[in-house]
Length: 303
Image 1 (tube, rainbow, N blue to C red):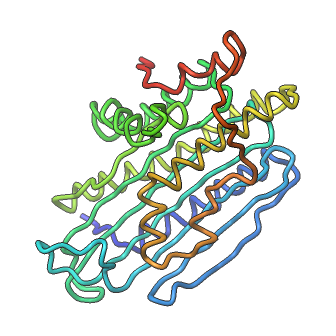
Image 2 (cartoon, rainbow, N blue to C red):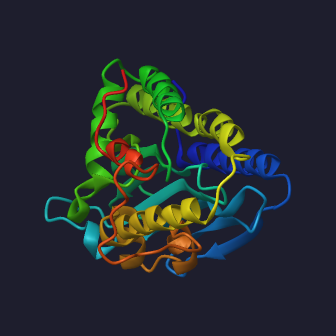
């Protein structure tokens, strides 16, 4: 059996970044991604690609990173003798112009540790997921999202979708508001291979999730990008963007990890929207289009 190396994973992730950027540029039709390559002083670096002020996308990023070096203190454990780490992944957040086009987030990543620099791997795992945060969710788009993610999960094992959907619902909850930041999706972490065969399976699952992004998002954008809206819908979009920012800054483990490991600030905070709003004690008017969205921000069984 061919051994999966970190170079194999990086090669896939770099191609994934290129493919997704090309797809999003085609959808937008006007804006293009700017490329910013960066180096991490402690080891490694990345490629940040950002799109701004487009016809469809107000702001978005498709980031690749591979960082390595001495294990950060926040990851050290008395039970581990590992001193070095590698972490590589692709992370995406897209903030559209039209309030009816949803925010989407994806992350797929691989992490490993060793006792010696570039020595035998002592511990390793895969993580990732896709979730969507519409200001105006609807059943058609939400079922489409969950069906394609279920299809990806079914390539791994039969119970994966239900398990990772539940994990996503719980993880992406804004606890202090008792609501999800969006309509969920899937989330998984610390999937550890116990053999080379299992690592091959987990790498294939990473690819199934990553390759789902374009088929998930493209038809949703195309269905909603030309819908008319006014200032009321734009204001609601800003409020929902505020919820998104609250989660990322208060709860998101990836944000915290980046900030605590001397990560690149521009890449870490790329996920924040260009504009957002927080209105004091705001509640949508009963019976309004905005009030009708609120049930979508609670866990729902879509199948």
